[in-house]
Length: 260
Image (tube, rainbow, N blue to C red; front, side, top):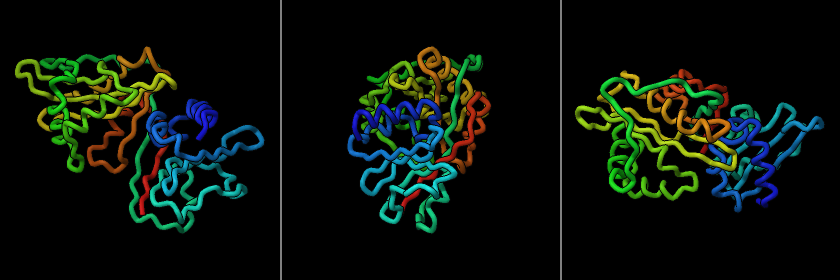
């Protein structure tokens, strides 16, 4: 993908980020140089098709209603892994992807909600020199199917969108216990913020800590970005989408992770 392609993709992404890409712009950007970009506009200048392919991986695919009139650039039978917008499911025809997971992708724009930490709790910045093992342990305790270690967490500090002020604990003031964690990132090129990790320990749930940490991150990023995005698994039993919508996130975009 050329620099002109990346610029064109960024311009399109800004207009409707949740429909254009399945994740924040910088994540796709990590592999853009080795990818091919396909863009098709209709006679009115509207986006008709967008696809990003890296060998046998389809990193994003979205097509409009008249896609049947367009020569398809993708041979789905050769694709082993694909991220496809729900609007474009019909383009798969009878292609077999036995592993399928749906993810919502929604957006927050405008003024962040007013919030303060619940009584007896306070915010504290994650100490990148001392807390990384605790961050890994905390994330592992909050998920059944996710396992990270200190080395993995440390690698996140090297992301070009890392901001130490957007790694936030909520601690119980009297005990010092870690009760909730929020990690966000900012891509100044867009400019966009994305919520990456939002967790509340099971011992501290149903006390408003999820809303508190999301609200605090939105407050911190709001002056610096045009919008904030977040993604999550549609069928997650904890229903994180409901919480994000209560905090002002909107949209109806769903992306499918497909794998053979």
